[in-house]
Image (cartoon, rainbow, N blue to C red; front, side, top):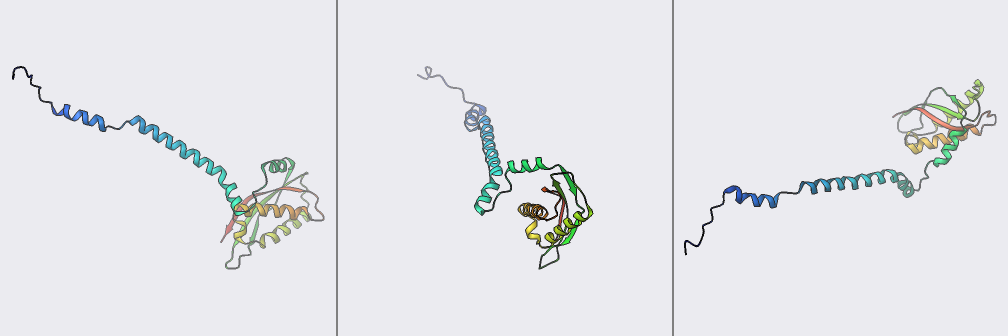
Length: 178
């Protein structure tokens, strides 16, 4: 009976270990695909959040968005010339501390710019009066700068002796020292 039984040779340590490691070995292809899917989902979510966040925030806060893109395009098309204004350096209306604003504006006008010295002095005077009535808090945000552009445009266009209509105000230099 002992002869009928064939003895099995003993397994070597490599043979014993090999089946266990094959079962525990992670599939690298699945890990890579999972990581790529995760990155794709995060990227798409980030893009959607980045593009939609300003409109959602303004909707929640109840603040109007800046001019519609179509309106901005129309204003840019109407600009025929640029009036260069000298740099402004003014004290702001901050009560707690002295704040300074250094700003340079260019005005997009509908006709050829007529830089009449009297008109330029009147424009600078009006802008200085407007700037000195603002606090640093009012003008440091993007919304504040957009409001400032609109106020300058309205202020200049409502002058009784305005020779040229301003359709765009460009801020080319803007530094607030607190």
